[in-house]
Length: 299
Image 1: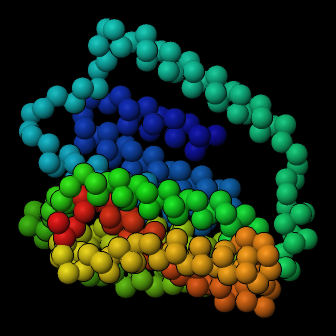
Image 2 (image 1 turned 135 degrees about the vertical axis):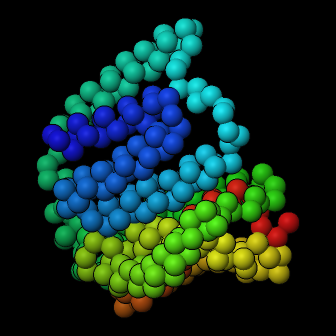
Image 3 (image 1 turned 180 degrees about the vertical axis):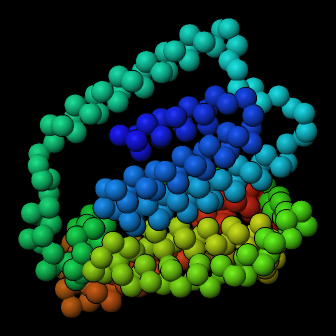
């Protein structure tokens, strides 16, 4: 109850505080508290992704945007008179949607599909139910998530050439040293999460989120100049699409061998799933860095 109340209070503060910096800090605190909620629900892999993307990457985007705004501009948090009915209508609609979702969740069958997933686990090539669902039983859904993220990168890069990352290293001289100190962790933790995903909570998404947060930290300290160079553009495109490409190759290969799209032969499943996880984790990390660039590098 304390976590739920804290989330509501931080969400309200992030939306309606008149000071932009306070709104950004409350937004980041909201996602850190949301990570604790996921830990409370025994989902540490989602908690890591929530903290890395919500508080880390998105927080960095908000603070960088805040640093680029001209000084003295109005925050615009106070609604105008004609906006208040729309605000109340949105709040009422949100409340009704929450009540409806709670009613639907209450009537869902219990304990869900856990028994069906456990019964099919031996035929998936992994020993953890979440990984089995994401990369075998419902792999098409995961594939579409990667496609949507890549489409978002294309959309962001269509805005034109990138803005050079706002590097506060001169204002915060300790930031480069902190980046050097943390960078080994941003490589070791994703490697551990990828290995752990075959038998416990982990896998490509939390690994990619943590690695991507480390990549954004490199951009903040201007320690990744290679990403802006034209000669590296083709390699960057290949790495960004590697997860989707390998996913599709496994799906088509499974169809050739078994006659079913995304059906992976059992003797090849562990090796192929690990390869897809590694490529997808790397792609997700680079996608998060690509979102932060706000434009296509090398133009």
